[in-house]
Image (cartoon, rainbow, N blue to C red; front, top):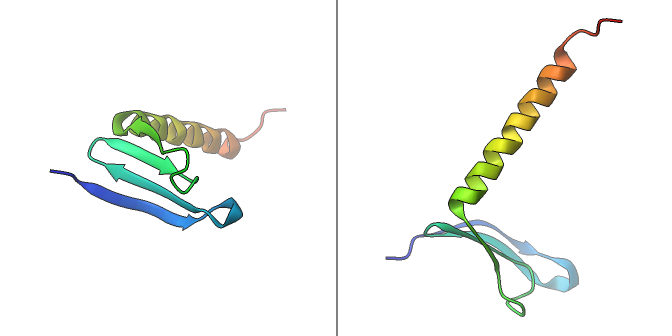
Length: 70
């Protein structure tokens, strides 16, 4: 059974279609209208990167809100 969820579908440079789609346990991204084929990464790899990015944002926000000691 194929499970598919569209994340984005938009126009890219040179009026090409661009999409980011979750397919089963993989993430597919293509902005070449299929000319070169999609870039594919595992869903778990994307989840790890999102968590890492959120932690960086959280740490950055904590740094910004802490008072400076001059």
